[in-house]
Amino acid sequence: MKLLIARVLIPVILLTLMCTSMLSGCANIHQYYSEPCNSHAYSRTILSDFLSNRFHSNSPVRLAVIPFSAPANISGFSSERPGLGNELAWKVRAELLASGQVPIVEILNRQDWPGKKEEFFMGNFGAIAVAREAGYDLVLVGHIHTPEALDRLKASTKLIEVESGITVWYGDTEVKTYAPELQSARAALWLDERRPAMLYLPRMVNRLSQCIAQAITSEEAQS
Image 1: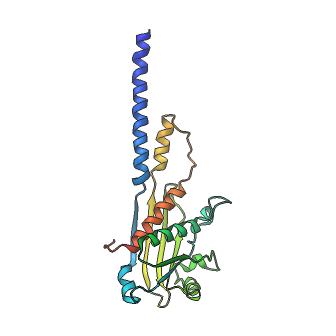
Image 2 (image 1 turned 90 degrees about the vertical axis):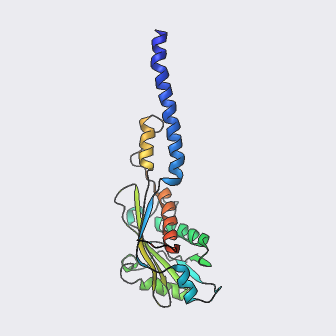
Image 3 (image 1 turned 180 degrees about the vertical axis):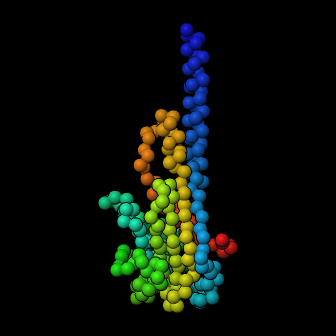
């Protein structure tokens, strides 16, 4: 009997250890690589070339990032955390500063005004006027799309020169997370609880901000 129990339990224990080890490895990989993103530019000028042609060398070019417009159902994580549009704007700002291409990048904290969401696709005249009044050279505006799935997040972004109204970059960026699949796999092995309604917005916002900044500052050809 003892031998029979050992023959049954040992494979189960080994399988559990193997699965745990694999999931641990997957978790580490997931942390760095499992949020793929892609950007599609409709209008694009290489930012470094535009700045060198438009402004004098070492000019203190100022870029205003206006909080992104966001659907009402994801406008905030909770009553104690800023809205999703504000969160994404701050993270994009940090990524653009890290790129070093624009000397001054600041949040122009105008949360909303009449027609803000609609004007993204109709000229952005309000954003340009607000940025011009505040003395900025460039303004970044964005629109977060209503999510079609819990594991995807998409935003449209424009970088506009304030004086001329020229759009330096305009495109869509989308990010996907595999966190739900990993969480489900862990739950299937009794290593975690099943949480089908869990949202993964923070990690998607982090990755989305990186992709937006990379797309805007990239000097390589984009589709």
